Amino acid sequence: MVEKKINTVYDVVCPFCGTLCDDLEVDVNIKENLVVEVRNACQIGTKKFFSSNPSPHRYEKPLIKDNGTFKEVSWDEAIDIAADILAKSKRPLLYGFASTECEAQSKGVELAETLGGILDNTASVCHGPTLLAEQDVGVPTSTLGEYKNRADLIIFWGSNPVHAHPRHLGRYSQFVRGYFRKDGRNDRFIIVVDPRNTHTAQIADLHIQVNPNEDYELMNGIRAMLRGVELDAKMISGIPIEKIKELIKILKECKYGVIFFGMGLTQSLAHHRNIDTAICLTRELNDYTKFLITPMRGHYNITGANTVFTWNTGYGYSIDFSRGYPRYNPGEFSSVDLLMRDEIDASLIVASDPASNFPAASVKNLFKHPLISVEPHHTPTSENADIILPAAFAGIECEGTAYRMDHVPIRLRKVKDAPGECLTDREILEKLILKVKEKLGE
Amino acid sequence: MSLENLILLTGRTINQGVALEGGKTTKENVRAAGICAIDKDDFKKLDSIVGTPVKITTDFGEVVVYSTISEEGPHPGIIFIPMGPWANQLVNPDSQSCGTPTYKGMKAKLEIIQTGKVLDALELIKTLKEA
Image (cartoon, rainbow over all chains, first blue to last red; front, side, top):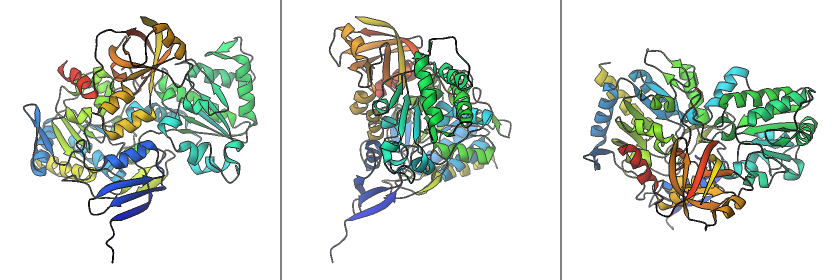
């Protein structure tokens, strides 16, 4: 009998973006424990699976910085030193959690509560304003399967899925055939609102080239005109009134419309007020037809992080445990604002790279204090950390649960073992909790 | 040559996504995210060739990146740097009390520079540690 060398794992879930594609096929060389082929994934997802193979960019043993260079240590020693830093710290920040599975996120909450620290996830710098707006005005939304089967008008507002969610268009929103949209792309009208003629805009039916930072004015202009107000202006946010009238006609006449919005709204001026208005516009359009709205979430399990944090503490992000109970105040307990005020004295970064993704001024303050990084591969954050705890890739090297951008939980699959001494994020956090409790005398 | 009163936008590109999964400390990441996409007509005013290093300055910082012509134009007066350490030298850290910094829509100035090096991600972040 011929020995089997390649094992193919079917229906693998891609742990890259919030679309959480669940139809991947991954070939694994069993003997060498290597990913050798990935089918059905986008470029980025494919790269993520290949980058889990051992390489010079992958950590395989716990490391501690000693006189400017990293030295290998045992897990016990690394956990002991890390727990010591955290237990002695008065205001530790626990940040990240978006690119790991829900069970690990839950352990993160437990550790933050034990430490009386601050708990935050990457929604803080991306869709945090969306959560604030949803708390303010609610949200009429649905699952992606509904959009696939019913939507005949798709609006991408400040989002560029060709680059950020490459398979979203093919699986849920643009090209895909649905039960009531049998002709796929021909049955759907696509509108893109973006200051640039993005690749998504180039394949849309209508591109509204709004001025940067003026989405709020445009949306409120549309809302006013929808109510029959004649505006005394020739242009709003760089868009001629006649074009807006044409847009409103399209909005009113569709059978089932959906707005997908991204960082173009949350990271521009007005932040959560942009989303407030987008949601109100969606609600008001329901006077004429069916209209819904969904945020395009970036990290594959950022929706999970918000959900897990919420069912544990009552709040989705920016949570402070310093008084022994959770308090929530974005702007005060959100990571970038804390760092800008130089308020923390240690940090534990789980599955994230704030050194690359935070504004430079806040990164300077992050580096002033002890930094512990739970990370599978080399990043600017981990390279400047004091302790590196090597993690397995959730969704590739361990199982777990992740939430798709529409809040549908999907079970991640394991396709191969982690290299070297890597542990899962959950195991690392469990070890830290035990050690911290021991040091705090609990 | 220089261009003033530009608006800087930042965001995801697929090359930047692939590079960050493939190794954030690699040269591939510099080629993917250490760049500035300039509108075609604006680029003509610069009278230079693609790949020339340019210095971008905003009220919040400055950084040297490679110049390129935007594939997602026309967008006169707007420049685009993919999200990452280079863009983050320039963005507005003020979150207006909502937690999320203003990563898009800063006023920017662009200059062609004769001397100056595009740093890789680690070199760039190291300057923050030393600061």
